[in-house]
Structures are given as structure tokens and as C-alpha cells.
Length: 478
Image (cartoon, rainbow, N blue to C red):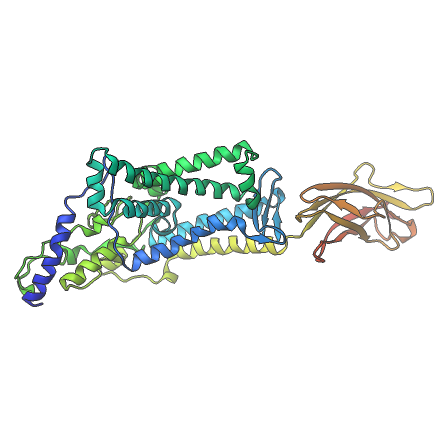
């Protein structure tokens, strides 16, 4: 590298050195004003964080004349597009929670706390809040200066505008959360006319000020001290986990760029000690000190370091996503050779198969059959044998249904008590008592199978059905 290149790089770093001084982990005694730089991981961060738009817009998606996704807690039912999940299907929710819990463990084992860096609501909301703060109050040096400035009209105006926007975002966060649990379009009218349930107002207030406090004021302190995931993530990492890592061998000893000094004369490593990796870190840690619980694996330090390396004409990747094995020069195991990946993957597959099976076999109606135990059968005056059954019809559809009951079993059986269709209200169980009568000469065994079939039709013309097998009891055969 020529003298002119060194001088040019050194000159461009003067401002960086002035911008970032000594840094240490913030225990809450100061506000971290992270610097924003453009780069590949900043772009990825914004793109992945944009999935939270669904949180705000999702409740307004309509499906078959109603809210597509509705968690109707008062009526103990959850509508997921065409499917209605009732408490009887709670096992599917358990599998879903297991799936996401194991998925989080898998992602952490492979790439560290990428959930925290790219998807976590605390990280995303804090990023949006600080972006607004930058637009109103300026770059980090200006914001730090404003922190120390007396309360004059300028400071009151900027802080008032900032807090007002923060409160508005907090309000929409709480409002959107409640909208998932009630009819979203009508909730606007009910909320602002005072007709909503008190729980809705309490929830919106808690979310409004909770969002303001966590994302606006506590920020990285939530990641350090309040989030339990920060405490347990260490046990999920191993030597093969790919995380943002500082290449110690290449970077040390650190040394600032000296004007006019040839690259061949340099006795320091590639790290120019500009502290830009710390200046952009949303939690304020120094990645050069090794892995720490405050690292949320967002990759912003990679953008900062690569931009500096390009300015001074040195190879990028001084800070990069890498495993401990890679940094130490050991062979890097492929994914399919890691036992942990196979174990986690197997559990994920089983949970996913269970969820798919549950939703694919879920019917709009459910039928249960209880046989009368005392007596098991009755002998009628005409010599026929009669059994009593209690049928329980559960309507899982979002509308009332008219259900007709039939039975299939012993030859010439007669179903009594189900001549007329049974009206079932959505989300409710309707018990029906029926009798099955069979002529004695038509019975071939002491116990014979009998199948009850429930059929109906939705307003859309879609047929629904369910069936359940039971047993018809008769006298002992001689």
C-alpha cells in the first residue's frame, strides 16, 4: 500500500477516533447512543424485522366473513383461517410451543442469538425508537450533548416530540395486541366510545407505557438483566456455533494508523483501534473482548469493521461470523455430522408432523359416544335387544349447524331418537340420547360393532362429517 493510500485512510479515520473514546459495559449509568451505519447486516436486520408488520396488520385480515386469526378467549376458541381450535385440541398448541422452543434452541446452537439480533420485539422496537431519536435529536455526539444540556425550549421541544411519537407507537402496540383477541374493525369504535371491556383498556395502557419504558428507556438493560434468554444462551453454544467473532490473531496487537508509514513497516495487527465496532453495538459491548452475554448477534459490528478495513485498504472479515473451531484452525464439521443438529432436527420433525396431522384431521364437528352401563342392554317385549347411547356433538365451525345422525352396525338395526336433524351452536357441545334396537335373530355375537355417523353442511355448501365406533351388547350366546 502506498503512502498516499495510508495518508488517505488515516485522514478518514481521524473523525472516527474522535467519535469513539474509551468504552466499557454499561450497567445502566448512562444512555447508549449507538451509531448507525449502512451495510449488509443492517439491511438484513431491517428486512427480517419487517415481519412484525404482520403484528399490526394481521388482525384486519378477513376470512370467510370473519377475522382470519382470532384468539377468542371468552368463548374458549381460536380461529385460524378455516380451522377452529377448541380446548379439546390443546395438545396441538403444546406441540406448536414445543416446535418453536426447539427451533429457538436449534438456531442458537447453529448461529447464536440471531433471534435477539433480528427478530426479538425488544430489539426491533428499540431499533425503531432509536431511529426516531436520531431523526429528531441528531447523531450520537449531538444526542449525548443534548443529554447534558439544560432544559430549555429546544430540549423540551425535541424531547416532547420524541416521547410523543414513542407513546403513539406504544399505544398502537397495545391496541394491536388486543385486536388479536377481539373483532379488530369494530374494536376501534368500541374502544373510543367507552364500550370495550375494562381488561382491554388496562392492557392497552400497560402495553403503551411498558413499550415506552422497555424500548425507550431501558433498551439494552433488558437484554443484559431482564431477559432470561441472555442467561441460558451460553449453555446452547459450542465450538461449532457460528457467531460474530473478532479474529484475535489477525487483529492484535492493535495500533492506530500512522500517517506516512508504509504497510511493510507496520508492527501492529489489522485492528486500527477505532472502536467503531463498539460505537454501533446496540448493547455497547466490545466484541474484541470475546463472547459476552450482551452480544445479540446482530452483525452490526461486522458492517462497521468492514467499512473501516475498506477505508484503510486492508482485508475485510477482521470481525466476522465464525466458529471457535474455525478461528483455531480446526476442521469445521458439516451440519449433518453434528449430533446436536440431528437430535434437535428429529424433535422438530416429530412436532411438525404432529401439528400437520392435527390440522389435517381436524373436522368441523366432533362426535363422542358413551354407552349406557346399567343396564348394558334391555330385552324388549317383542324379543328385540335395545342399547342406550349418549352422543355428544361438538360444533367446531364458526356457525350453527344442522346435523343428522345415522348408525351402521348389526343387520336391520333401528336407530331411535335421531329422526330429526340436531341443531348445534358453534363452539358448544350438544348431548343427545338415542337407542339402537336389533332383532334377537339378527345378532350373531355377544358384542357387535356399531358406528355412529354425524353429517351436516355449512352455509358455504361444504359438507362436514364425523364418525365414532362403539359396541352393541346383547345376551350371551348359547
